[in-house]
Length: 149
Image 1 (tube, helix red, strand yellow):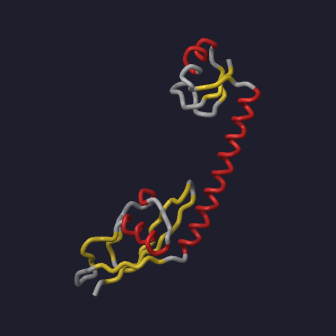
Image 2 (cartoon, helix red, strand yellow; image 1 turned 135 degrees about the vertical axis):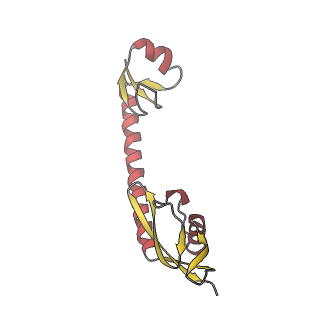
Image 3 (cartoon, rainbow, N blue to C red; image 1 turned 90 degrees about the horizontal axis):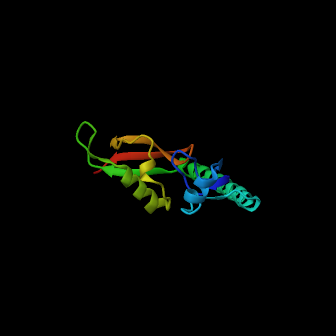
């Protein structure tokens, strides 16, 4: 029996896959637990529509992320931090502070967990951090740290 999986099923297949299983497995396990549906002409049309919608959404999200990357190129975040005689900072500028500054100053939301280099900014001057906005779209964020007076 051909079945379209509605969820990932361990050792069987992934969501959206059309698989061939025995009639008993489909009727006694997959269908009652709503893990799959019969692969009829109508259900195949629905699956194709869902895949097309997902592809269109993915494309739109990628375009939005690329537009945001271009916007971030022109932004330099300014931070003033106390430092010692040799230019070493007392503390550092964390990714959380960077995300909050972007939100507050420019009304841009990014995920603090998506920074590619997980280090904090702990030197004076300009540091460039990379953040993955979407799959394969990496933005560079310029952070300028100056000495507090």
